[in-house]
Length: 183
Ligand SMILES: [Zn+2]
Image 1 (tube, helix red, strand yellow):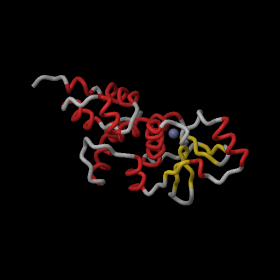
Image 2 (cartoon, rainbow, N blue to C red):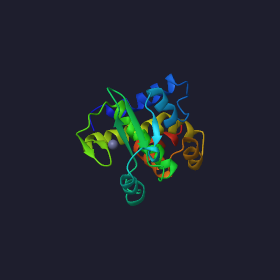
Image 3 (cartoon, helix red, strand yellow):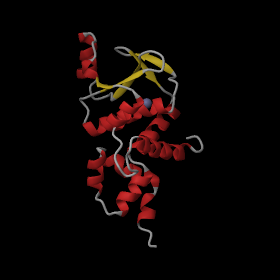
Image 4 (cartoon, rainbow, N blue to C red):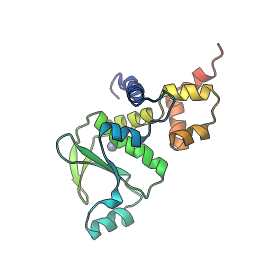
């Protein structure tokens, strides 16, 4: 990951919260962020596609895709998500799609599934993952809430994320060292 990227992600998490009138330890939902970015996020099952494609997407392949972004004109995008996946998984994958847009990633190629889907190189995928995690669970929020003694289950509920993502962010931010420090 390029130098300074992780710090930039924390700053983005903080800036979006400021702009949206949220405290640093409050949840930034994908609904809130996508509205702010003017990127519609829709359940993919509403797509007007052929029965064959629908069968492929929602029956045969329904567990192996999460979301995709379509280009709908210059600098205009729409995100479609797979509502067959659990809601908290959707939270993370929708944030991941929005993260690609925030990072201004240029797709490496467009793959024709039922429709043209943008794909990215692995470095860009890593960046989108990292930014998504940071936007959902910024280090500052984790520090604040864990110091207050909030239970992990409650943090996951409040931020509508999976326990796996929460645990991953706690580990990666190294925040516990600071929580347990005695002053
Ligand atoms: Zn991606």
